[in-house]
Image (tube, rainbow, N blue to C red; front, side):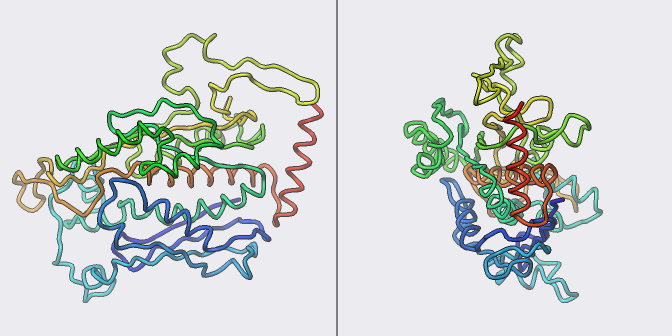
Length: 385
């Protein structure tokens, strides 16, 4: 069973993660993970924090000589900004808890709900962990299992399909997304739409506002039969939706045709099934997004996630001071104007994590060779049907 825990505050000394259940014998390097961490820090619309941090991961355990050992893998990402916050965020009694106190909650953040739940008077005790800084470790963890998926023939792709009012309606094949998205400052696959997105972000910055958008993730090489219909918590689409919704700022998830399917008749939604000798069952369309009944069906897996605009505004919304109960403008923390391209990288990572989990559940194996042998046997059985 694959599982992980992560910890760390936005301005604390570091982010840490522990991954359990990775098979032994998986080749992985810090450079491979660092490349994905760098992608997360990019994109037009990012704020000043990205000029401070240069995220690098370290393996503290579970990896030797470039290969996993089968034991828990511990990862560390240092926060470069810690030097500016060490006195305020220190864990000891000498910490400057009376400095940089935040008492005006930001609408749309965890600020108010968090202090009410945990009984804090300083919102900093909430915002430090609710911050999207946490996603750096989730990208590291997701990238670790992304290597596992590559060994199993699965490739994950991502692109941005909308930012604010601008939508990219192009439909290139997923295999073409990486090169096209890499050429765009907003990870868009259409050059004209990408240019309009950049202008929209610049206008929002000038207005002291923020923008959200939609990211699309595709996974190719996913075999039929991952996930299950037998219990609600084993359904692959439910697990993917939950993982994507756990990303800070994500407010909607759809699989395949998604919400559009609700407006169409069944005859125009469901993918017809054909059979060809030598290649087996297939579907000429993929409106289901590669998942039917909570189980992968062998088609390209396709999911989308909608990110709301970032709640921290340089022209803050109305709020109430917790200490005085008087009207006050919301607090302003250093933030981004638009982080949709970064959310795309995080979404790739959490999708990779959920797919790796169902692979391990399906195939077992304490080492990579056993896992791959299990996949070969399973794929052989599918070809006999």
